[in-house]
Image (cartoon, rainbow, N blue to C red; front, side):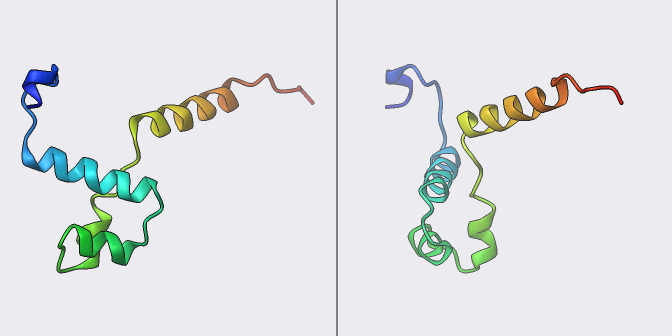
Length: 74
């Protein structure tokens, strides 16, 4: 199905990480994420909570703008 939609070969683990990341971005309580992903340990659920590329781009862009902001010399 993924290949048919131009996404190439996507494995089960990629789907799980995407699902976990989306749950995290939707601010789903960690205990609910743990249950939905069927993790025995809540620490495992934390490893799936990566932010989206768009959120990463925004954060990086904001940081670069701050670094490159003209500073007044004193």
